[in-house]
Length: 190
Image (tube, helix red, strand yellow):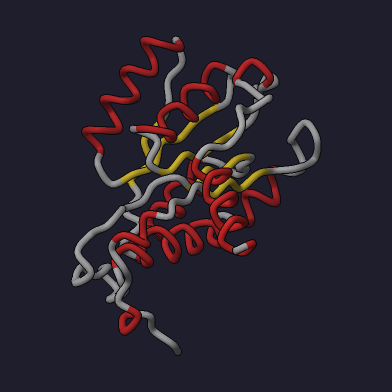
């Protein structure tokens, strides 16, 4: 009985966390900082991009839908008077991820914040990435991991110019996979 009560309490705390004590007003000036927000044209990613722009960071919104990104960039400019930049990134295709990282590296030598926020939720289990992985796992886990590893030199370089000598990689996740499942046969072991 005690285990059941503990599990229930854990679920409630996870589903209804306490109010945050850190708000966008607590974000310091980010002048000189470069950030990438994957999936930055909607939801949490859009709000993240807005706060970063408001605090003077240079922001790249990375995603596969350029129209949605350009619409968000236009709206963000109206709200913040600052302009974000689009970076085409398809997290379901390893070659496209490499191309996006290379494109970013051609423009920037440092990266201070990487918000791995974009992803897919509950696609049909039969859908695969361009490389044959389960679409949800391949996009939300492998795609972000590969993108982060490709940008590691720029992140490490960013420590030299960041205000506190640190950079950040923030991963946004969901428990949504529980509602759809994964096809473990598509998890390649090499």
